[in-house]
Amino acid sequence: MKKNLISFIVLIGIFYLLIGTCNIIETTYIKNAVVDSVEENIVIFKDSEGNLWSWEKEETEKEYTPNEKVKLIMYTNWTDNNSFDDEIKKVKRGY
Image (cartoon, rainbow, N blue to C red; front, side):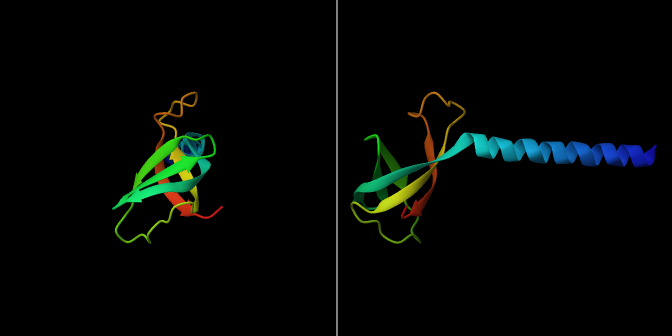
C-alpha cells in the first residue's frame, strides 16, 4: 500500500512537470527583429512584419545600436490568435 502511494505521488509529480514544460513551449515563440531606436534604457525593436516592440534593458546589458539584429523570445499571454498583447521575455543578440 505504501509503495503504491509513493509510486502514485511520483507519477503525479512527473505529470505536472510535463504539463509545465509543455506550457512553456506552447506559450513562447521566437521573433526576428532589428533595433529601431534606443532612448536611455528603453529599446524599440521592429519585427519582420513592421510591428514595434519595446523593451526595458537591464543596466548590465550592453548598449543596443540601431539596425542591430536580435531574436525576441515572446510570451503569448495565452492568446495564440492575437500577437498584440504578447510580451518580450528575453532578447538574444544576432540571428
